[in-house]
Image 1 (cartoon, rainbow over the protein chains, first blue to last red):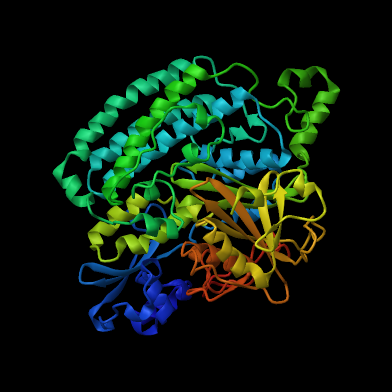
Image 2: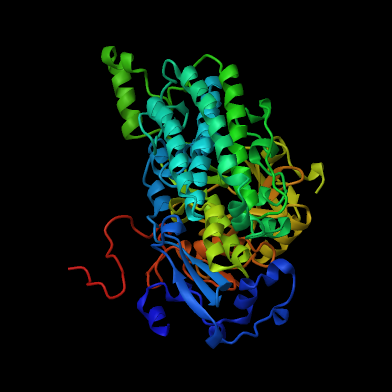
Length: 435
Length: 174
């Protein structure tokens, strides 16, 4: 065991044997801060030779990418858990300082690869807040349409992997199958299944293609019977309930203290959804329910995501009805390149086009923090500009990164087999955690 | 905090900034920002939390090495680093941002861990990428970079481009 800590490079980041753990750290791991008790009251009676520290991941199929967990086990019971992250760190925030504001959305879209459009949306909204420009109505509604479809795709992926982690392999096939239908629509609109670079500062890259309405409505007719099937397959099934109910319980106070958002916070019964509580775009004009749970367990987090797909379908129907006509990007020559046809006939338009894509546009000095509700929680973007064409600093507040902190508290006292269910229910996307 | 404490757009035009718990404030694109130095940091965040800003949504930092002449309200001494904390008032659905000045010579700041346990990972990230030390943090280790990494990548004097990749026991660069 001691050899293991010497050989890897993350020595100090790993979980330490009890004897070497400081009192404060031990209290943290036992959740003393959340329960408001001093570390002297924390039960640390079990001696080291009865417990075992094992490593789960980073290449474990159910750790959703390269999440590594150090677990201290007493038999099959998890006593402590510490996530070790950073395996996917590629310095995207540093890279963003070297890309223009226009190139920035190609960078952020690769962070949360299960819901790339939300990342583009929050980055674009931050740039627009700095520029203080209002984008056209149609562009805003297109953004809403796309981000709701993205939420459906992301939650379907969650249902697939959650099913797989708990042994419902057929659920994995179904989830991926249905998600592919959403991605097919994205491919039609943006040209790509993922990493679209579709939502850009100033609007969206292209207008919706002909026949988009039929495609979306077909999708909205296709999904509800499938969701009912999942209900039959999983929700009512005794084995599924046995594996998820009462597993990984968290209270509202704990979730708030740990800054957890999204389905984790809502599963405790706290109706916090930025689309409703701090509306952006035109979410205040739509009718939808914020789905909440009541026990804060793994089952609630599953049920919330399943029902949020239904709510998203409801929202998409309203968006299809209300979609206004008009421009899909702002007619501000500073931000928007000239239309393709003008480039062929006008020298100035060609120069303008060239300048925007090589130099980029300058953004006035300042700093903003903009947040939206991604499928995983509050996705924020802190953007600072020094007046040049590149961000001075771009920080993404990644919901998965913050939500991962709940893992030790969810796992404490549970079984190793439940650990898999709990990781899955937090739904971390490692690209976003490590950035 | 009552509504009167929040300055409107007109109020920020005047030279004397509005004070929130004794700290100067400003509006950045309509968003409320409170400026504070290291000594008043913990006190201010505690006071804001008691005001109802009970949710810490984000904690990050920014290195102003290349932009020292940034606009700040009077009474705020610019330093090289700023730690930026975004707090959220959930009942009234409003945000406030605390910008704390951290000097280059001794980049330390008290931890917010006791107030908001959720800042644990965020402060580790700032320590890792900026080298700002949070006094009292229970487990201040690198979180994204390997332990033996030299330097703090998000500092402005840390170059982008070719740097020898540091992995333990790996052969060095030729």
